[in-house]
Length: 156
Image (cartoon, rainbow, N blue to C red):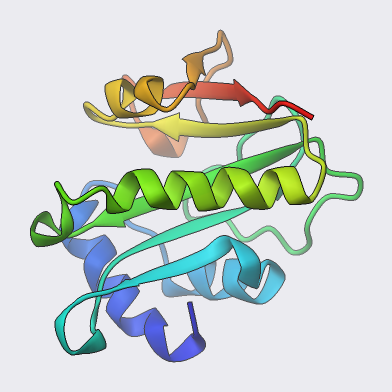
């Protein structure tokens, strides 16, 4: 993802996650802090039709929605998949699975032992198919009722 992709990614977020709004500054900060964890999926005409945002985090915790980090934790104990969003026309072609692979690859490259995320809506099944399991950690309040914290151990 590039800074020039941020407005389009924000538009994708508004369409895909209307119940989970975040200030544009959140994605911009994640891009600044961890550019390797911010991906844009280009569609026709190179316009983004999806994006993913991930970054190092502390083990056993996930930042709340619409929250600036200030800095990445040192040391980090996990990789947080903060968001993956694809427009309907970009789904069904394997792109989401590729994005998950890229995120997990970045976590492994950094030597992190696990990846963590919060599944909302009906997304838990998708994440389970990619090796994530629910854990008994309360999701931050911004994710709403029914959100599930999920973790996947990463092989060394």
